[in-house]
Image (tube, rainbow, N blue to C red; front, side, top):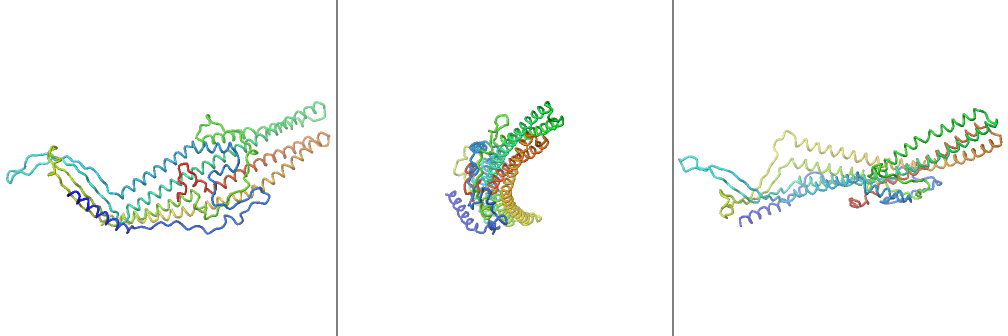
Length: 485
């Protein structure tokens, strides 16, 4: 019965503590206000002839890369999600943070332990006879303790740890977004370089044919030795374009293999052609107010701000007294044989209150540090939001300029191709010099490579818009709970 009475006392203390818990100190976190902006730039529209248009949307599709209509690209992204070490690391870090939150929550409950002891004591002798004999003293019994947390120190600590787990949750989303974006970028880079190599191969083939024609003309006495040397020089010059491009292609293939969690020796990227990749006609565009609720880096900064707010509460609670309740029931005896004898039982119920008196200014300084830590995280959050807006604005402008650039390069290519064809016909008819042919060919080569690069850049910037909007990562269910906030 004495044990029951002690437990009842502890229960009453717990109820009293729950009533006091309403006095949790420290600021209650409030999410930053949404930005009152309607646009990212002064004018958000693509040229009418761009072949692409912006469409208002609430979020980006989770599998945004499928908008490019390339099964090989889809397969590579799927492989990366399944095998990326960076995602595995982010998942493990999130699991670690979740376990730490669960550990912190344990502080809200009574703690039950089994306490055992063995001591040797010398008994007091009969009056006037000195010390008595030495005996062994055995003890065993449960010990219950509970911190009612009247000012919310534990509660704020749990809040802080939960916010830090949210940071890791959004870091996982950011890792997913970065991984998918990098895979698409490397894939488009491979397609771009492959197209440039194909263009240079054709140019080199034309150079060889020109050289053969000039050599035949020279042998027939219809061309000068200088024309032969010029043709050889042109061929050698164009052939120098290939090794750097092939090196760039190798680097891109190796980088893509690593993104997929493979060694370059065990996996090689499939051949990709720009012409086989569809350019999305409709591009989603969310409002700035939606962006800050979707981009993982912004949400991670917000969660970090929440953790800093909770840290103020923890530091504030340390300035006030802390109450601890405890109850114990102990069997104590000088021999193991009588240890379980009811006559050897003892119980206790107690409460302790520890109030800080003097700590040399440490506690006040810790609270000031927590406040300044919050101010620092608030500045980081604001900067992250601004950078996210800037990134979207940059990509929107890039897409606008890409459309104009591709159109200009297409016109330059058509003009250069027509000029080269006419010059070659004039040379065959003896109405143009070989030097004129080489100049026309050089202009065509530059236009051909420029058009390929302009098209590739447009694909890359289109992918970057999906990444910059960032909302897809929150709907990814590969280790991340959808709609976390």
